[in-house]
Amino acid sequence: MTFGIVLQSYLYRTMDDARDLLKIPARIRLCKGAYNEPPEVAYPDKKDVDANYVRVMRVLLRADLSWNCDPRSEDDRRDSRFAQREGVSKDAFEFQMLYGIRRDLQEQLARDG
Image (cartoon, rainbow, N blue to C red; front, side, top):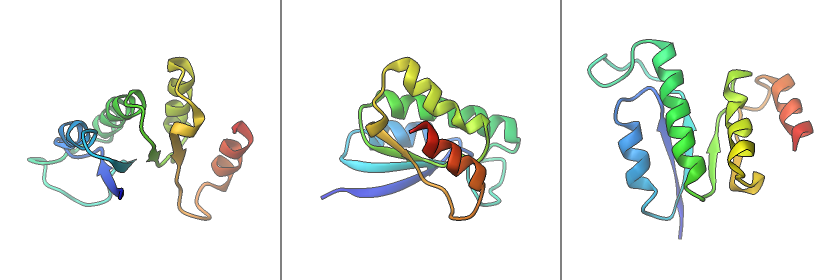
């Protein structure tokens, strides 16, 4: 049996959580984060959240497991470009997005395969 877990890149602990979760058979979804946490536990600046997203995404892509990410902008499409450079199969990850949000990006990702 497998189960799914969502990690939020805005938390300081997310990289450690990702590494721990790679040891068990779980589907992992990476998102930016949606709650207002204090600066003691979460990055207060968007640029730091974005940078941590990229760091965690690279660890997940290199781990040879199925995982999901939440692309919200052109910047977040870097995970598919990184996967291409690293030789990661398109079957190893998927994009999950809220229906109706960023339809242009959804259509572009579908066109890109």
